[in-house]
Image (cartoon, rainbow, N blue to C red; front, side, top):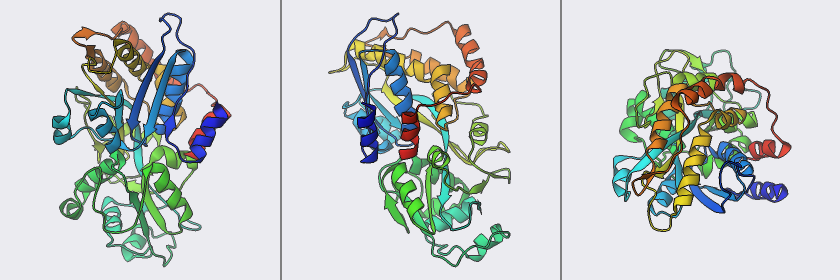
Length: 389
């Protein structure tokens, strides 16, 4: 089975499916859940779903990494049990849904500017420079503005090839949301959204597609999820944050962006945050589910497994897996508010979640940091997931 899954990765499929052992405290049932959406959290979802299925025999979880826009459409059409997006629903998208949709944060990451320049592995950029590169206003690497920002680097007289997403993407939404805040011209000309009318560069599908073109193209620069850059050891730029500091995307700088008051519905952006150590293009990513799970073609058993899965993802064990594949775990405040959101899920008015004692949940989360420090070796197969993506 592992060899087959690895083959799927190699030929570019984005569907993950397997099964495992069920907790003895629960009745073993044959339940299949399907989800679709963001490519950004795919490495985490592939491993956390696999781990959940290993502990729950009879449960199968299929996930298609088709982009945030596709995930939202699939949830709206009720062709999946859950969607996944790096951008929360807009007012228009919310209005298009047939019922209330809840946003369940699962982990945090960043959008990084990865590049390929021979002999150069460090680069400093500002938001204004990034905006002008992706609007086609700065076209060569030895542009005086880039040279002034990087006086200690010999930048080549080489054409810049911006690489952007061709599909509807939450990563694009977060990237453009940041540029919308720091560049008045970007706000006027480009705006923000999951899909934009690009002025220059090459298009690629999904984070893996952008990463691949950047790696293969001398002079290319593209925006990708931080976990891909970290796992593939791709060079990425230091970005100037709101406090005036140049920071690189790490688990620590991404977590710093979330050191703020979080809304109860957990719908927020973490771009251009004021913390002095914050990476300026940080984000949360969400699983999207209907609050009322009683709709045609969806059983109460499926709803029960879905709620149990969501509780597992935000648990210390689930969040520990996030860190192992280069995602920042949710902070305590986020876990507490997300647990309250999960508790709102019901089946035709009947509560379906079985929540641990709140005080015990807090103790478990507080111990999460210590647990995450333990050395946890991934299997060769799990490493291949990250490397191939």
